[in-house]
Length: 271
Image 1 (cartoon, rainbow, N blue to C red):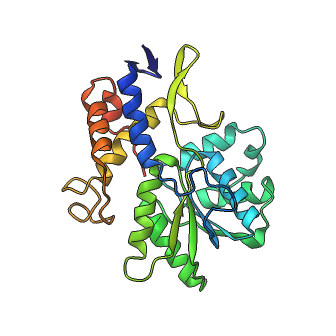
Image 2 (cartoon, rainbow, N blue to C red):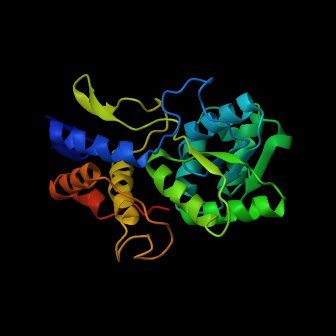
């Protein structure tokens, strides 16, 4: 057995439970499809987050398909983490300048370093949380009289499923564009040599174990459609989300194991 950051020691059941929940949260409609079988989309939307490789993936998809990229994000819970990630990057740090919103900072990186033509860059810089990403993105598109038929939606993988629900909620009163979810990477932990680490995540700008477990446990609480969740029976921020029995069982294993108590308290605060 070994530890994952401050948590542990973890056994095989702990690792399996974490990966089941992470795979559910990282909703991925593309999977291993090749470019010939992947569904078409006419807009990429990136919800602002602190993982720079989600921006890199979103820009690559927009450039490959020749479609606009809308970046949604004002100042929220992830803004400080994003600024720290950019400041630590040997190249992107030059984009920090005086930018404060997530959308404008990520947009600068997309245009300055990732080769995205400014004419294909759209910035929504008022949203402060996941729900507003969907609502304000729709308002922005409506104001620009843009009516995408299909959106490729990119987000921090652990918030991908909630972001999908938020976008569907934003279009609840009318026909919603087809939402194609792509988290860029599906998180998976396991043994790397003699320690537990991420197996499929890009090498730089990973989650800390504390943030990873905080998001992992907190997202299931938010998605659960009861009086404490964000669904119709609770705060009403989201449409109903079905959570499979194996995911609920895995989440309960994590919460009841006694190995992740700091994470289970929901720290740090999330969007």
